[in-house]
Length: 287
Ligand code: 3HC
Image (spheres, rainbow, N blue to C red):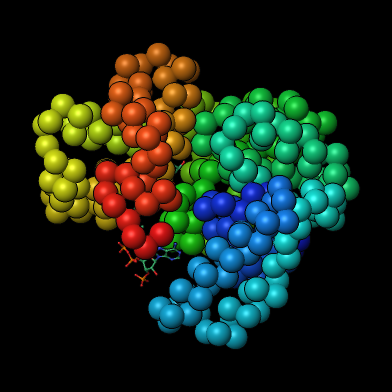
């Protein structure tokens, strides 16, 4: 297989829609699958709104937006992905759901050489690989939020992943204009392995009354030139997602630094999930 021309994306939430947008902007024929017709429509609206924002900001012309949209199709039937050469699954970070999706894709996709990539941030890639009849062609492909902006993709070959799959996946990431790093198939991979304990430390600093969120964030933005401080960032990622990643890292390594602090758990229980719910460490009126 040379470059990928027919991509499938499963899940059109924050990550899936970003991946589909980047691929369509790079000229690929992209078919997006969501669980229901309504979810597919919501995904289409999210993606269209993102392209419209691009036009408003002068990033792309109206013509480029229209061509991008013309390269995207939406479905709520995984069977419609049968002719895809490469599929990225980006459904909810839930082991049962992801396993079911990857199994169904393995059956649906006709090309025996097609690659099934998972955008998981916390489930071992090997667990998903062995649920299929093609464990050599399953790999982790971890994108970063917002996908159209962040240049990195972590490549996570499982113990079962073939060298050819890894090479083709690296080529595909480059086709999308991304840079790659190779990460081990262990909880947190490379980036979250470093980022999550930092974010949890900032939550503990608020929890202990040590500093206010604004002061912590300004400290890191102005003192260390981070584009956003840790509490704005955890709001962007989603407190529930951060908690889930922290739990999987804590389960794997039993390292106390990875344990989600009580304040994070309470905020997730209260539905204060960050940007996506309108409230986290900050309030958001513009979601
Ligand atoms: N889609 C497309 N472009 C976007 C965008 C989006 N959703 N959001 C922002 N942009 C673009 C803007 O168009 C703008 O481009 P320009 O500078 O060329 O005009 C640029 O990004 C900056 O945007 P804004 O001026 O609106 O806002 P900021 O300057 O405050 O930047 C940010 C916003 C890009 C989110 C920046 O603050 C940032 O990079 N923050 C760090 C994000 C980060 O660390 N992400 C990784 C999270 S970890 C993860 O995802 C892994 C997971 O497993 C948890």
